[in-house]
Image (tube, rainbow, N blue to C red):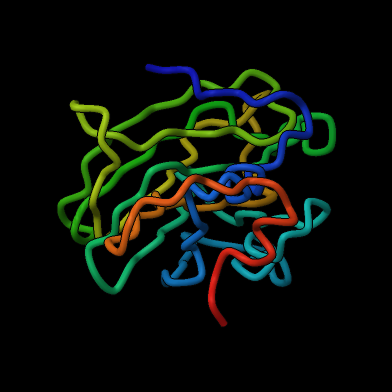
Length: 185
């Protein structure tokens, strides 16, 4: 059982993207849920709005399945949870599983969340501290605070490392002015 890397309250994972070391790849995946209330599904989980959320509708464990078309390198999973807004709907125990498909998923992390508020950064690394390569990620909500039945998740982001250029090594340009001109259109 591990504790996730907590960021300061309000720390946005988009700050990771601004460093140029990772990029969000959730849009390249096919997302599915074990259940959801009408109007509280995948679209709300991925809409970049912290006021909307996925709400499960059924028995535990509640599952979020993220499937990629090809084997994909994944470095970090970021989950937004807010105990003050969601109370008994807030996850307290989460399992992260990876594999090629539903039939060979292996648990790589199990997290205990204590009244989370903000972004939770979960590094997805192998035993050598390298990012994992997988076709599928499954997030299983095993328990909620106050023994709640259904769950709320407000946002989930999936990040891959940015590979170095094969043309040559250039210094990292991390200011906003530099980042505006870092790629050719």
